[in-house]
Image (tube, rainbow, N blue to C red; front, top):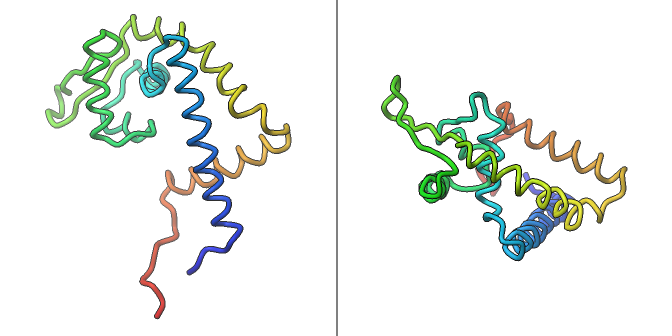
Length: 158
């Protein structure tokens, strides 16, 4: 199975756009003296979770970071009292990350800059129709992976 040129172009464009927009947003956060964008992402996911907490592996699945990086990041954030880490009493192998009241306040303080940055560095470059098309297409790709993608990579054809 070989990818067609349009598919490869879509993949590369998505990666380049993501990288450029994230770097611009991160630089904007830095200029404004906000927490790092990766911290904001963790706080956003924890705040949206039931009881404002997630198991570390669930958090790693929701943010765009490796599991090892999420663990280090949560350790850093706990030293600033934005999150806490606690062992699961029922499953000693699991660790919970929870947002603190200070984390909720930081999230609220930073949210307006995040929303403005998304507009300035991403959505302003798309028409309303393109926003809809991009959203639907990427949601479909995400759903395929979350729901168990039926496609598998086979052995290369000889």
